[in-house]
Image (cartoon, rainbow, N blue to C red; front, side, top):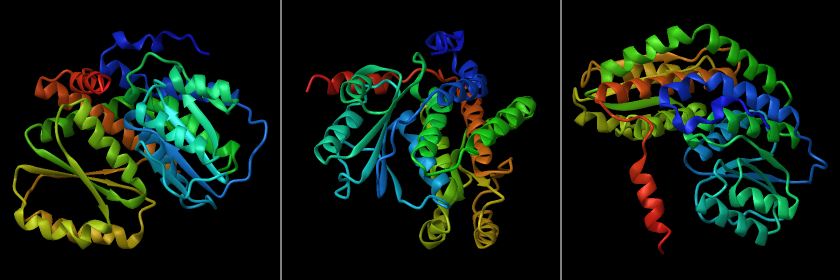
Amino acid sequence: MPTTPIFAAMEKTMDLLVADFTEHLSVAIEIADKFKLDAVPEFNNVLICGLGGSGIGGTILSQLLADHCSVPVQSSKDYTIPAFVDGKTLVIACSYSGNTEETLEAIDHAIEQGANIACISSGGKLSDMAVQNNWPLITVPGGLPPRAAFGLTIVQLLKLAEAYGMTSPKWKSQVEKAIAYLNSNEQSIRATARQLAESIQSKLPIVYTSNWLEGVATRWNQQISENSKGLSWHNVYPEMNHNELVGWASGTHDLSVIYLTSSFDHPRVSKRMELTETVIRKKTPHIHHYSAKGDSKIEQALYLIHLGDWMTVYLAEYKGADSIEIEVIDWLKDSLAKF
């Protein structure tokens, strides 16, 4: 396992952790290259269990696989698991700490249903369970806040998807291209992120995107909450046009809309965004557009995630917030442990 100093990271501020993103991706590829799956079981569906910073990768992976994976892939963020889980289900558990109580209970239920289980973790109870039961396990370095470990875990999820025949090995070259692009354009990305943060610091952000990027929009929401200590919401096209569009009758200048767009967006979705913006602009002039960069969906998702991570760090700075602390989450976990 890598011993690089980046993983003595609890002493680092969030800006340094975000700056390490491409290094995390590179280290993650080294780890993934060493993973070998002894045998591929027969399975008809996939459930990815994980929450928070450990769970968002499962959501994003399911959307990245949707256009070419022949079996349904679903993410789960709960104590329970869907009724379809059985002996022909592949369950992937991702818990960075290895001690996420919801994920551990979900895996207990998966065991009861005879599911095939694989795990990603830095240690904890989940790793112990994997070793005891001889499940496939990819161990990543610990020491990071889970949300800052996204680069480590998303690569392992992609590796498991390849190992189990859900996607081709080309994901690796696509991640490597993303690394090269982000490294070459880091200063420009940071400048763009800072400009956006400055412009929305006194607004309530709304992130709009297409359906395949909903996981990325969720990541923006999560990072605004944890890093910037603020509220936001997101929605996707075309679904937004069937409900939330009407709600813009109550729109105000206190709202700021962030559009995350992609060359992979359906042409009708792009047209819907264009037309809907004419409605929104009557209520607020604060509308921002960011187009994903890269030739593949993986590259584009990683670009938008990195842009959003930087934006939330700068937004915390403008708001005078500590982007690393999550005391209220720690309080909740400690309180739950008493019951």
